[in-house]
Length: 253
Length: 160
Ligand SMILES: [Zn+2]
Image (tube, rainbow over all chains, first blue to last red; front, side, top):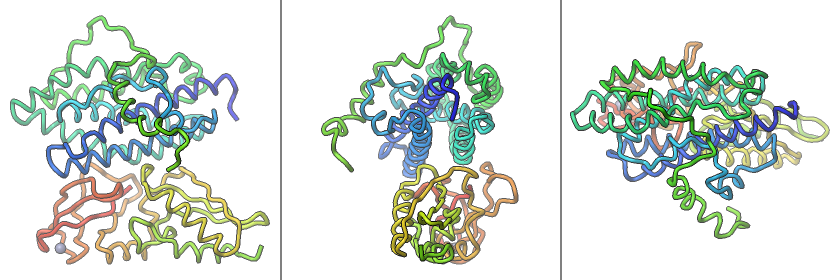
């Protein structure tokens, strides 16, 4: 049992982790049948399925705390109740856009998961250790593609740079703390977000430079976007994803 | 309760991985523990890949196999320690090879090195003149290789 004052913040944090994986999985699944080559179609379908599996683990941990089932949360919540970052809900874009988003997300996971694997909340630590074993394959894949696109043709480079210009400001939301996070950091349930972000930038900045990319100026005044705010794209995504389940809420399959 | 743990293990040896129907859930290292007491049988299993759609099928098959012995059965899923391909038994690896699926590379202690893959020996001809075509395959646990000697593709179980 965990202290009651930690249960609510923990449920919020788990929901953020789960929703990011779910919405990114959905965006990746949209590539099925549309990837530039068959091999990539297969790869993206795998990525989507892995992420769906990871989302299921996070929703499952949350269910153990709150009793709310994953199916209920996924199919019967409106956009305003989702807690994913805006980065993962942006429309699927072109191939460079999709690969960059995957890379930014994978690197964030690669710094977050080993830290979460040390969580004082054991179920969280165990889940993070499990998910980390699979995520390494994702990061390898997206890194190879970034290098290929960044150092490839003038067009592939231009498209990747354009994607970075759009996504870079969104990416920092991956490290924006939730209101309840401070208590969780205090209890050593989760790592400090600022430290994670520094570790992430230490990884990502030199690699993006290696790919001949220029990181946009982030001195721009831009406020931290809370996870309660979404773009209109999430509503469109959910309308499609939830339509069948909502046609007959009592149906079983 | 008439059933023994040894009998349960024996029954589970006949429960196959639905995606690789020649290898049992025991040989795959998916069944972690069997406890028999007065309430019935408790089986502990662990997922291979978290998103593997075969997990629910395996859980049901395990339950059915134990109930088939006339015992009540509870299947519990644990994530820790995380499943690794090192838990696939020698006979399991040999069965994978005969099935046409190259067994996963051996991990020497540490986690799988996903930055560099040793050429997978072709399960048909044994050649190591092989090239990785895709680190992702038709299921979450498989990679796709090409054998320069057979001039045909084959799959390898991914190291985890
Ligand atoms: Zn061959």
